[in-house]
Length: 162
Ligand SMILES: Nc1nc2c(c(=O)[nH]1)N[C@H]1C(S)=C(S)[C@@H](COP(=O)(O)O)O[C@H]1N2
Ligand SMILES: [Mo]
Image (tube, rainbow, N blue to C red; front, side):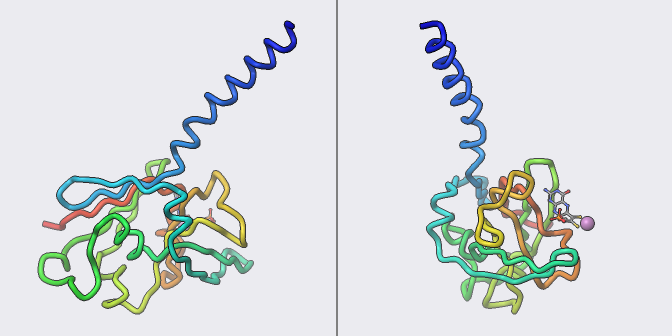
C-alpha cells in the first residue's frame, strides 16, 4: 500500500513538473495593436513545412520549419503584396526564453519583397529540437552568421520603428 501511495505521489509530482514544459510548447504572436494570438506547437507542426540545409559549425544540418511569413499569416499578420507604406518601417521582434532578442524587418521576411528564406524551425535532422534549441528556432540561411538564429523562441512581436 505504502509503495503504491508513494508511486502515485511520484506520478503526480512528475505530472506537475511537466505542466510548464507543455505550456512552453507554444508561441505568442503579438500584433502591432497589442492584441495577440497563441499558436500551439501542434498548429505549427500542422502548417506547411519547408526544409533548409545549412552549415552549422563544421557539419551540415537539415532544419525543417514553417516560413516566418506563414507563421505570421496564421496569426493574422498580413504581409505579401498588401505590404506598403507604414508597414515598411515595421519590424518583427523575436524573443527567446533566455531573454535573447533579435529583429527582422517585416519586408525582409516577406517572400514578395525579399529573396531570402527565414523559417521558424521545429525540427533538426528529422527530430524535434532539443530543450537548448526548441521548441522553435529561427533559421535564416541568408545570414552569414547564425547570431539571429534565435533558439528557444517564445514570442514574435510586430513593432513600429518611430
Ligand atoms: N535564445 C538564444 N538564441 C541564440 C543565442 C542566445 O544566446 N540565445 N545566441 C546566438 C548566437 S550568437 C549564435 S552564434 C547561435 C549559436 O547557435 P548554436 O548554439 O546552435 O551553435 O545561436 C544564436 N541564437
Ligand atoms: Mo554567436
